Length: 301
Length: 122
Figure 1 (spheres, helix red, strand yellow):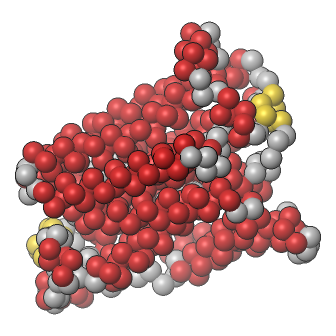
Figure 2 (cartoon, rainbow over the protein chains, first blue to last red):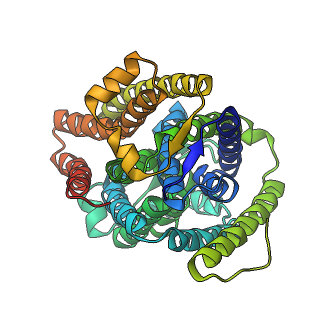
């Protein structure tokens, strides 16, 4: 991992541009830029995977701050639930960061490729089935489990689309804890926000409406990212020359992407991004196999 | 809920302030680095060698991009930490002991992380 980088104008500007594009795509897709910028850093800029992961997770902190929840989102998010799950996402992040430090670069690339492949297929199955449940008032009919009751995790929000107040009882804390921990590990190991897993933990297992899950997940991302960032920082893996362009670029791109998000057709976007993620998964896999095992897949670049 | 409003109010400004300052430092650093393009080693050891306060202060005063990037990075990482501290404080003021415990738990994870880093996890 000891080679020199020419910090030339072209390197910086290209990195800024790549990060902006990554942040932009990420915002359009409703995920963090990490999913796109890490492969970009590794495949385009030939930066070591650990450095890419560390730089990405720091920029996740930046975008999570910049995302700046709108007032509406703030009222909708469940702060107590966020604080509670943060215990597990941060623990997971610590574990993930330790793994990232000790695993070979190619092993991390392999896991990243698997995650990309999963996301390429999963983006088709995320349908918002809440509408029916809201109409039938099903969210308020669940029975809380012991932990949820003890910590008063339940909440309510005003759903603009359905034009009614939705009260929801939180349950399934144990399942939520498990998935949240996994989300934390993914975040620490791969340098991504992990929002997709966090949202599914709440929406699928804990009886939390989708809009609340999304808002609450955003609350957790910065703190989770900070934990692995701390460890990476102390290990000297946060190469700040790389972090600066990546952080600025991702933030700018994500901000623009969020502004445009409502004006674009989602279905088409999902197809494009699934294809892109599938391609990146293959490219990362090819790189991991080449470096780790000397196996050369048919060229993808 | 009143405790949630309290937490949001204090926290939001910390996050934004930290982000704005670190972004400014990053931009200054990028401009400085572009004015004098040079080589940088990609090793963890080199990165950690930059961690000396006297070196950093000297760098800030003499327009060394490394120092600006370093301070910006540290600041960025500290914003969520500050947020956790602010949350503990807000729940404490609202006498919500359960959530003081919960948020303190997160702080403990952060402290353990620092300890592991100090112990030489690298």
